[in-house]
Each structure stands twice: as structure tokens, then as C-alpha cells.
Length: 476
Ligand code: SGN
Ligand code: CA
Image 1 (cartoon, rainbow, N blue to C red):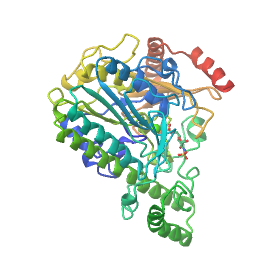
Image 2: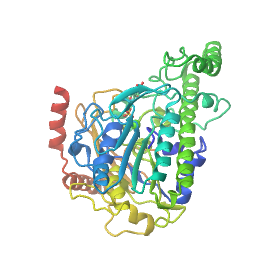
Image 3: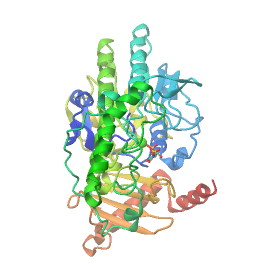
Image 4: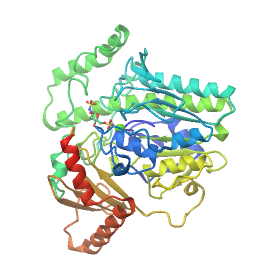
């Protein structure tokens, strides 16, 4: 799993920005899911959902400030009980110590890109090098060690990259210096027709990226060693000089920021792609590949300039969609593509299914493995439910919940606002025209409102519960 890796920056999803030849190997050998969505688009809630197979209001991590209660049921615990050797390497972000793992090596909180600290089974130590490489070394060591074991295993490798503030490995610092990136048609979005939630966020490329740290016009971070600092200077120093000389402003400055943002974001992705190649090679070398379920995903999507934004959180497409590639030789036909609607709530039941285990009744999702082999699974859900809570907080994306079907999306923003948005994704894939008040959509709107209530009831969420959480969150 990567952190904040959008499908728009993955080759096999049709990226116009970069190539990811190693990540694509998973899709070539398995299935690419085109409609996988997160149910609450930030880090800790998504991770807790993946572990528990439950929505945020049930596992308790509704935003990044909540501490995960590690005594609850998770899929790693069930695999462990079934004899699996379980390991967790990388970003965790759930604040309590991991449970259900025989071995864990985690980054404290968000972790650092260069010379990061790792908490290894409770003991903190600093490791020299670049975070994506260090985590990959640990993962490959774990895979190599399986040669001497007859036990099945679970390995969760959770990269920090390409999370903000996008610091690439030394070897990738200038990788995109000559690249020209196509501009998203909505880079200069004016948010007309939408609720004020879209206009009032704080995550625009124009105003909310810092020149110093995000766009690296400042000095190298203290944490770098001397050689890393020299490489940093060599890569970013000339950009600082050019910036001073050019004196850009207005839209030209936005375009410059957009380009600098993508250069570093994609630079970070490049190391993640190499990492996946090394992990897949490790599985091949040890002979484990033919009998291993391999999954590549990200805790949520990300805006790469669409609507003028970076970051995620909104129920709009780029942030909502999770990349999801799954390989299981012998069970999933190579090169498949699936368009059913699934969510991160379905992950835990799927992983249990892959191991031949039944999901406990308390898990809310269902295994999507049958989707990879059958053209249609009868009774598969045709809509997904979303609920985002972290407000007021960094980036100021208002609380909202909603439903997405194959064609439509209905969103309700609440708390310091009471606003509805409705999108016809077939006519308006970029979500620029809110048709909630359009009489031509009255029937669609009623149907979606019913569907939203049905899903809230099904999953045990409600307007009233949302109001209660506002009170408890604000008291914190
Ligand atoms: C940090 C980032 C934010 C980001 C959150 C949550 N700022 O606060 O941009 O939205 O993490 O990200 S930074 O300047 O410190 O990078 S999450 O993926 O962990 O949910
Ligand atoms: Ca994230």
C-alpha cells in the first residue's frame, strides 16, 4: 500500500504523467479494479477500515486524531490465529501499538523521508537512507526468510511515499526536470454551481502549497546527511535561482507550482514503483509467487491539480477512487479488468477469503475475489457509501456523506453548512455541474436520497449519529 498514490499516476490506469512498469506487472498478471472507492478519504480511517472490514463510525477512527482500539477484531489477527506468520512494515498512523503481528517495524506518525526513525517491536532506531528503499529492504528480507519456513505468511508493506511534502530519493530528484505535464482541464476551477464547501477548502495549488518546504525553495531539511544535502542543493538550488529570476505571478505562478508539485510527487512514485519490482522479484526468486495473493493499493486517491487542488478528503472522483490491483495465479485470469463497485470495507473479507477463511459476521464488507473470476456476481452492491468527518482541521474540507452509484453521486455537506450536491457522472465526469436543484433530475435525486438512507441503515450510520460525533469530536 502506498500513501496518497492516485490512479492518475499509475501506468495501467492510463496515466498521462508517468510510467509505473513494476506496479503494472500486478495488473498484467491479475486484475485491475476500476471502481474501488474509499469510504472516508484520509489515512488513519482508511487503514482502520482495511484492518477491521468496518466503516469509520464502527471502528472508531473517524479522523486522523482518533486512536485505534487495537483490541478489536482485524483480519491480521484472524490470519495469525490460523497459523499465518504476520508482518507489518512501514506507515501505520493509528497511534496505538499494532496488534495481530508477529513482527512490526513502523514509522512513527507520518514518518520521515530521509534517515527515518523506525519503531521495531517497540524500540525506536534511526535507519540511514531513503524511506522507500529501507522499507523495501525489510520487506525483501522478510520474504527471503520464508525460504526456511513452511508457514503461510501475511506481509503488509505500507509505504510513506508519495505523501506530502514529496521528497524524492536522491536518484529521482531531477527525474522530471524536463517533463511537460498535461494541465488538468479543471486546474483553474471557479467552483461555480457547487456548494461553498468546494470553494472554502484550503488545499489549492495556488494558495496552500508552501514555496519553502512543499516546493523546496528553502534550504535542505536538517535531517539530511552531508551527501544528501549536496544532492538536494544540486537538484533544487538551480530551481530556486530560476524562480527568483523569473518573478512569476498570477496564473503563470500556479502553472509553475503545479509542475514543481508533480515533479516531486512523481519522483516519489518512481521509488515506490522500483520497490514493487523488488518485492515481486523476491516472490519469484523464492518460488512463492505462484501461491501468493499480491495486492497494490493506496489508502485513498489524491488530487493532482484537478479542481486546482492537491490533497484528498472530498468525495469527488480523484480522491474517492483507490487504485486496486490484485494478482492470484491460478485463480485470477491475467490481464483482467473489473468495473464493479467495491470499497476498502471489502478488503478484510477478501484477504480472509484468499486464505480460505470465513469472515466474521461483524465485518461489513464482502470478498471481491469472486468478481475477479466471474463476469457477474449476483447481488453484488451497485452503490457505495462515504462519510468524511475531519473538520475543522488541516485543509478545511467540510464534513460530508454521500452515495455513489455507477452513474450518479449525491453528497450532503453538514455541520457549519447544509448543502447538497448531485452529479451526473456520465454527462459530467469532472463534477463541474451540480444538478441537485435541476428539475430534470428530480426523480434521480429522490432515488438517490432513498438509496442513501438505505445504505445508512444497512451500515448502522445516521444523521443523528453524525451529529453526536460532532459533539464528541469538538470536546476533544
Ligand atoms: C499532513 C499533511 C497534510 C495531509 C495530512 C493527512 N501536511 O498534515 O497535507 O492532508 O497530513 O494526510 S504536511 O505538510 O505535514 O505534509 S494523511 O494521508 O496522513 O491522512
Ligand atoms: Ca494518505
